[in-house]
Image 1 (tube, rainbow, N blue to C red):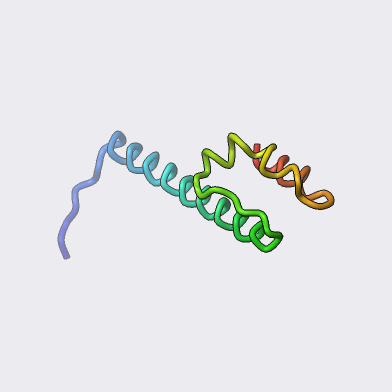
Image 2: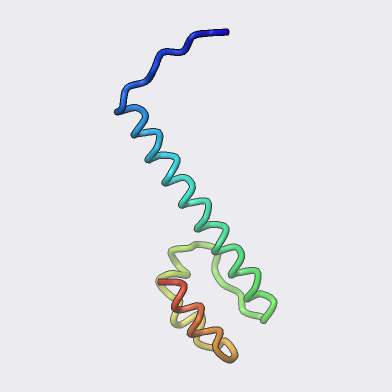
Length: 77
């Protein structure tokens, strides 16, 4: 077995932050895709970019039936 030297705190913390940010980005992408898929079942087509959805969420979601628009707005903040 090969011996691996112990890394100092700085490289470990950089890797930690990188992995945490990468995980956040993956979760955000999954959420946007999930919401787009659910809304497409109602006939509402959203743009693919998360930033566009975030900026225009009130305009894009105002025509949803029932309580969907208030619930989605609350979760999109």
